[in-house]
Image (cartoon, rainbow, N blue to C red; front, side, top):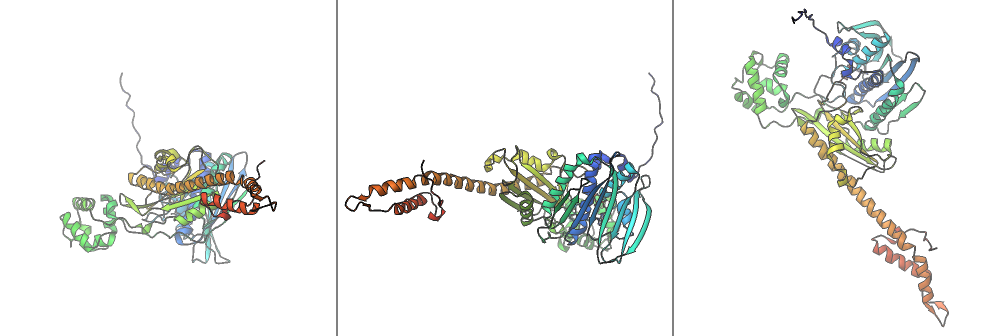
Length: 530
Ligand SMILES: Nc1ncnc2c1ncn2[C@@H]1O[C@H](COP(=O)(O)OP(=O)(O)OP(=O)(O)O)[C@@H](O)[C@H]1O
């Protein structure tokens, strides 16, 4: 057989077209996921625009039915965030891979993709642009845009633009996206997402209005915000050749030593000298004159140098034990709650902090396995649970019977990984890869809180045991007191030597002593024997 020679057609593809063709990988695979993901991207941007800047978030999410037959919905998310400067807004919503979050600082957003996927999905399914109304902090006007993503060009297509003077001193952003969606099937996931968001942000006021007219409100329960993250310089352990080249391009340092000291964390003049000599380079040379092999030598020196301080945790904004407990308590109404925030740790030069909370009993329904609430940079992760490192620890490696938990049990375990770079398995941000350092920290954190749960359950078990014995023993008090009193009757005076009441009190004292209680802790009402 002779092979048929077909001419292949070659061409390049821009970022917008790539994601337009592969929307599933960003979480927009079907009409259920699409509306869930749209709401998620908008809410996460709103939280980043408020909390990260020290503003107590007030966020309203409204989902309206536009066309029942075609399944078209309108999603409106409104926030009191910092807003977006008018020259940046069209790009923020119309250019794939455009972001203000490409810096070493913990934010929910990191790819510069999310909202554009929602804009794209909306325009693909309804043909309509996204409406953005924004008023940046410190501006006297508000700006309105109707914008689409240019699929071929990856340039924003602005269909309408207007501006207006503000009547008051507000700032914030409102985004309106119409899209085809399966709200009915997405509904529970959206409700769960909002609930889980509220748990870790008790300082936020979140309202959701559904197409059925249901209004769900999570009012702010504290005004305490987590410490906002600070932008930090890169840590030498996370630097590769490409990153080094980018830093050299940007630097204004005139000598290699100055470059190392000014562009990286954990490098002082002395360490810089050591690194330069490890790479056999001249400390006074201009960094821009470094050849490719010299850059490689410098990166190798970074890898080999054993004494860097760990990456700075200033870029991180953990939720904190107190807020985790407040959140779990107010939303789940458990009988027991505990939380731990571990000390900062690092993988590949990225700092991270693991936090774990446990809620047990109360209004939590029993289930056959721990109910896992996974979070990464405060984002609740609802899909792909079984492929997440947190499930590996909580669902598979921890033996809960060691902590007195036997299933079915009313147990919720909350895990939070805060990092300048979350190792997500995909751009849809649904599960976190099992990086050994993260897995280890998660395990230690779960064990630490689980030990507290065990102590609580042990105490509770003991108390219940004592209560049972109290009831058993107290049952006999009236009868025994009466009998003893009768036995003590003085035949001459025909009166008991010891009154029934006195014996009763004595018996109570004996019982209390035996059970290690105070007499007042015994029940008031004494049950009579039938
Ligand atoms: N509500 C908002 N308030 C202020 N800025 C916003 C808002 N929504 C979007 N932005 C800006 O638009 C940018 C792009 O948002 P987008 O959702 O595409 O990506 P991201 O949040 O940076 O990263 P990711 O794709 O990981 O979510 C953000 O970085 C932010 O600067």
